[in-house]
Each structure stands twice: as C-alpha cells, then as structure tokens.
Image 1: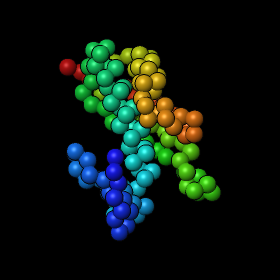
Image 2: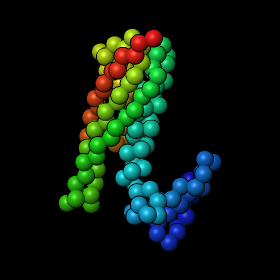
Image 3: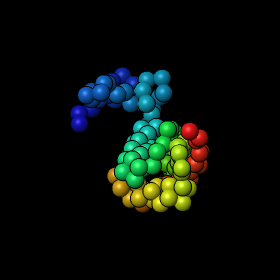
Amino acid sequence: MKFYLKENGMRIDLDYGELSISGNEEYGYRPFQLMVASIVGCSGSVFRKILEKQRTEIEDMTITAEVERNPRVANRIERISLHYSIKGYQLNKEKLYKNLELSRKNCSMIRSVESSIKIEETLDAIELNR
C-alpha cells in the first residue's frame, strides 16, 4: 500500500477508489473512524458468513458502534461497544451469541487490537413473520 501526502492529510488509491485520510473531517475520513470501520466491517462480514453457513436466514443486520476515547493519552481508543441488530426468521438468540463469539475469534481486525482496545458486543434479534 502506498500513501501520498496531500495538503490536509494523506490519500491512497485503491481498486474501489480514492481514500482521503485527515484529522479534519472536512478533508477526509478521520483515522479513528477508519479503525472503527475496519473492526465493524471485519466483524460483520465474518458474522454474516457464519450465519450463512449455518443457514440462519436473516433479512437485515445493522451494527452500531460507540467509541470511548481517552483525551489524556493522545485521544486513543479505549473501548468500542458494538451492538448488532439482526432481523430474520426463526432466530435463536443463544445461538446468535455463540456465532458472534466465533466471529470474534475469526475477525483479524478484532484479534489485532484486542489486547489494547476493549471490544464489547451485544445483540438484538428481531423476529420477522412470513
């Protein structure tokens, strides 16, 4: 990966498009937003694959992330709370939590930061009728 200096941050050209990074939201994504997005994207993708393999039928999944940062230590990320809202059919909340634990073990982004950032996960299962 090759990053380039720009007036108010950095940029990288990826197959999907250009990504601008800046400490100022007016000029690009803030680094902490990208960190949280990486964790959510990885976790959500792994979780979805596990649910598909187990033939758990979901219609929708949203993940809300709350971030706690420490302004005394370079505004570092201390905690990320992820809340999954899953809409589907014949959902078993206990099984969903077990699959969430499995996804955590297989998410490279969570595994990369788990010793320095506390990551908490909760979920709601919303049962849909056919």
